[in-house]
Length: 596
Image (cartoon, rainbow, N blue to C red; front, side):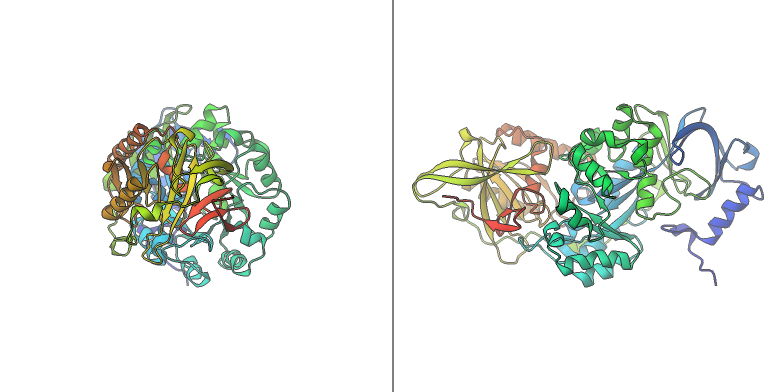
């Protein structure tokens, strides 16, 4: 017996009624719902652009061709040579990193032609576990943006941190059975994969059991290490930062996701890979993008636009942002404009400058003139109790941030953020302790970094030093700290570090800048300490104020809060700080800050 699905809840598959309608419209037995005439159709299958007509049947495309006429549709729109392109799919991102709720994120990107994202919810998973991920799924239900999920594989990322929750094999198994889940998300603990840890390897097998994808995360891996990682069965990677690294991964059979985030700017370096020879093996992703970049540049549409402006064939650029990702994630009927596909499309009046006039989702116009049509969907409002009141700090004093050492000269290990990347470098640096304490030093561009466990568990406080942030005074603190999301704070004195942490506890999470005992700027993020339900314009204003306040204290680093948030991510080389201490990523171990 054929299973009949609700035609108003089309997701991964289409129901018999919609399918039959498309066939009947294409055959001329029924009228189509809409005919788009004289479209310069961007064909991502053949990588051509040609003048054509597109006939819709409700949520589906019934037919493409020059032989269809106005009499065959209830409504006709003459595009007069404007471009018609498939809606875009962001192949790897974290909704939480935008600081926005799913509905606010949709309002920001759908008018730009982004109709779907594949989200790894490991930020909210690290804070609230399965309940947090299910909240995100509920909060993204029924939007004009399809939100697909890959199950977070590293919660916690490693054993070298304290997270708010953990996802083991049983939790991953449970989540893989959900309808909008496409696979197992980036397997970041590459040392455990290479070491042959059976529980880590089993996560790949779970994805295969459900016939879903095991996604990769292999920063700087080459040679035998890369081969060992891929031998586990992992099939993608979004961490390539150089052309040589990207090419090696392509040759190894990896689906290479080219990333352009707020900090991680990899598109320029990897642009030569976007060519006919590798046409099917490249996808575009954003990973982590902040509100001002979403507003000024866009989401994954920015990669397509930038590639076109750099001289990449437009149809190939669109393919990297649509069809390739749909095929990789086994999203049937998506990613292109052809008979039987979902009518997820955008109309552009200017291809090079990527001027989007309107966006269609499942055959319905959902955005026009840069604005979301609010009546095109029902905004979900799930119960946020499970993701509230998540900042539970231990009792703190300034003494907890003191770095004790005997008087005299010492050699310490220092973290150095790499500009434009999430990578860090390790440097040995000579310092002098005075009064049995090593302090931050503005003249040496040396700041103190602290990590405070905020999940109400053991209350660890760890300390290290960062060089190159530019701070001269005050402190910055964030409850967004990949991926454990404990409090990370960077500052020049212990009193301001303490105030910054205490203010985050009062706000129940967020970002804050303080100096000389005063709060200069803040952004509350009360949903899991990661997200606000305010709109993107309001959030952008607060982010601008925070970055201006940080600059007033001397920092000249781009995206200082995003950069700060990655200083705790102990699965990307080279040095990181978690609540348990300083982590040598390549060695997969805790190390002392003090060398001698």
